[in-house]
Length: 441
Image (cartoon, rainbow, N blue to C red; front, side, top):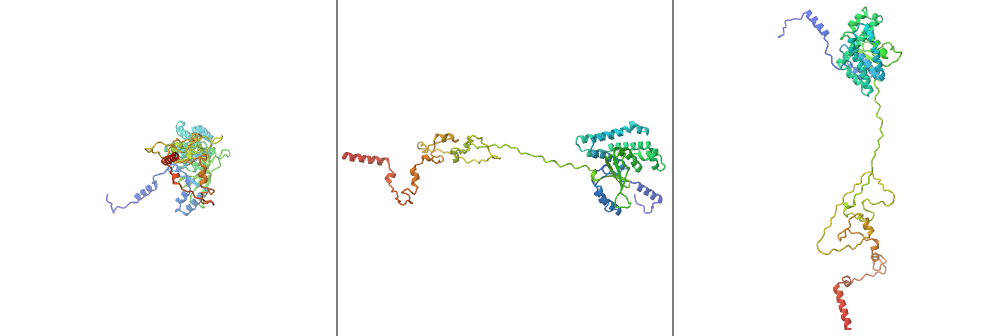
């Protein structure tokens, strides 16, 4: 459609546009109940706002460390009080208190009948509220996270709508039973009319009168305080707090519900003492390392005779008997790693008769050795035992020997080739010569 420059908007059309603009509400988004977060986020939100709001939001985190958002869909006040009621019971931590509250709320059923409510209809909504009390108690008894369960339940649109409807019916029945107390605050309205138009409708927001009645029937008998902090343009550098009358349960205080009110909206505030105590650090569990030290002996047979120490009595790597009567214990805390020595294999050479070794072993030495014994001229050289050494060999290298160069009477030995290389033929020749001379003589 082409734009007609000659068309002018009339005053009636402008009035209709203005009315539609004022009635427009942006779509509501976000969780029905948000997670707890630091209240410094509110300070950041108002950082560029009016100086009065800046000052009040800057001082807010000094007393109220955290807050929880509530969706602003016209039911935020009802939802915030109902959620705070259950949360205070969780924070108190007495499992019996959940059963006591269920019994107390059920005892109000006759009052609701007198107010004209049909219990067969109200039971559908009240059962949801009672079931949540039982679910939270069971979760706490089993050591589960009841606070997370509560957030999940209130973010279920069906569950929270049933609970809010029960809270509305409970408030209306309480006001009707005490109409003389609330009528002066209704500015000419009757309690019946006020409940019909301002409390029971699904879209009705909670005001101060309904909030006071809900506190009287739900919070005060349970020992829960109610505080409302107003963030407005009033004088002062802090939010204005309104604390409702003390609880009517014999002075017993179970907990508190704190609401932050901004024009047309409620959120939930927390002080540091309202937060659950952090879990204690896990206790240090003493840990003991247990292990068995097992002595490992490398069999001597794997060395195949290549290690000289295995040939000595008592020096074999094999697990021999201990040297004394005490049991042998190893002081090692780890396995002994022994390298395998390259094995040497003996090669037979052809030709020549077998000649046994010149060194002889006594029976005691042979019985103790774990090595397979084999007499061979190619075996590893083994030093002779002391009793097998010729004493003349020991004196030959001594300075007391006259043939030693350090002896003062040094006399070198004369080399006699015939005596060094005496043969059988020369011996026989000498004997024959002697016999001839003898015969001739």
